[in-house]
Length: 297
Image (cartoon, rainbow, N blue to C red; front, top):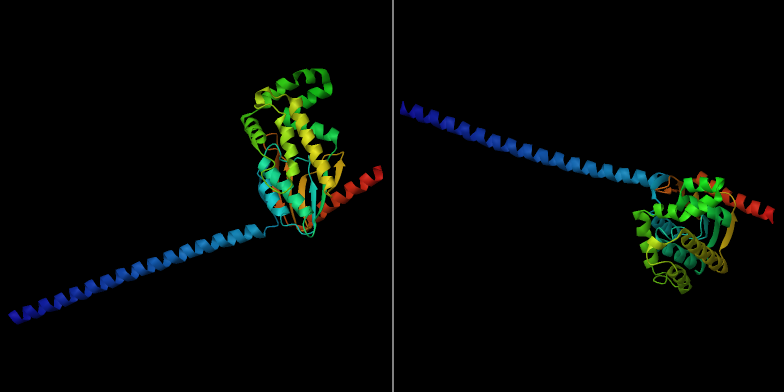
């Protein structure tokens, strides 16, 4: 009887050990399967991110930001130019006030491209003086001032500085501080750009006492100086009497960045493109301007 009981106990113990071992194996298998699924899920996510980035990079036209954060993108693109750069800007000093460091790089890159071993053709179209004045007033004084000037020029002139003081937002004051502080001889080989420093030095230390005429005349001096300097360095520059459909910068008929007016706060939203139809449109825009200029002469 005892032998039978011992045998039964041994059998049950063996079954328990076997069951425990099977449980451990099952848990191990579940853990391993979970790990494999986790790895596959992570791998799938990484692949999806990679595919998404590839898709974004393959899209011919995409948003890159607002003015003046579009300037680094413009600088990167024009630095890759090998044959030709076509530029439509409202002003010669595009970004000089709002982003002086990137504007400085922009001018330096263009000059270096023009004086490279294999010079790059640089063609620019900017606004003529009257159109430039109107766009600056709209940008820095606002649409209400522009409307007032149309109906009552004397009242607009009397209220101009008061309106300008209202327009001096914290963003404007921050830009003014950077504008005054920037050293235009800090980068590049074209030290003649230090003339810009002397122009800017004539402005008040702080913008609280800055009048609109002081500010506007400084921008005009910067634009005129840069235009004359760039022409003397072989740039082809024409002036437009009508506003551009868009500001744009095109390199070798392969890549372009263009910006559309948005609103008074952001001024402009920018896109990059490699779309051939847009390239053709930009190229035709330049040909149209050149044709009209020749007709005027």
